[in-house]
Image 1 (cartoon, rainbow, N blue to C red):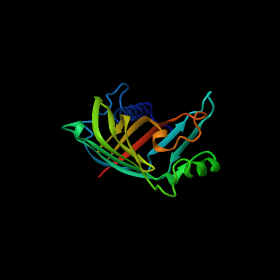
Image 2 (cartoon, rainbow, N blue to C red):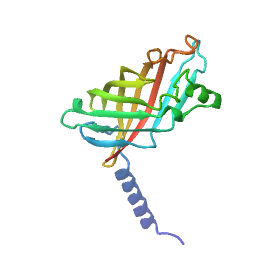
Image 3 (cartoon, one colour):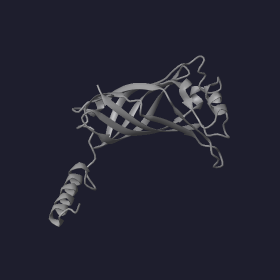
Image 4 (tube, one colour):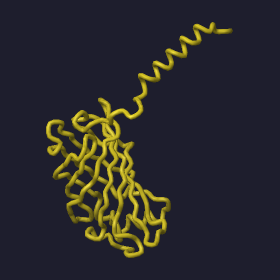
Length: 199
C-alpha cells in the first residue's frame, strides 16, 4: 500500500515533534540539588567500584560491592543540613578472580569474619555548585573510625529517582588494611554511581 506524500510528510513531522519534546535539548541545564530535595533510599542498581593502583603502573586491584544499603536526605532550604547514611557489606566484594575475592575477605584486608559492615555517616554537606557538593563524615571499617570526604555530582533526577557520581580517595593503613604496600598503593580510589528512590 502506498502512503500519499502529504500524509507521509505529516507523519514525519509528528515524529520529529515527539522526539523534540521527549529528549532534553543539547546543552540543557543539569538538575540542581535544591530541585531534588527529599529523602531517598539507595537503590540496588547502584554501583560501588574501587581500585588500588599498583606501583609502576601495573593493573592493581579492583572490585565492587554487591550488597549495600543506605539513605540520604537533601534539604532544599539548607544543603548543609542534608545527611547521608551508608552501609557496605564486605563479604559481598567481587573481583575478577576468586582468589582476589578471598584475599579481600581475609583477616589481611576486610576481615569479614569479625567485621560484617563498613559504615559512613555524614557530618556536613557543603554545596560547591548547583549540582555538586562535598560530603564529609565518619567512615568506620574494621572497628576504626576516621573522617573522610567525598565529591558528589548530581547527574539525573525526576520526581521518583535521583542519580549521583561519587568519588573519593581513602588511605587504607589507618584502618589496618595496609597489606601489600608499597607494591600496591596505600590509597583506595572509590568511583561510585549511586541511584536513589524517593521514600
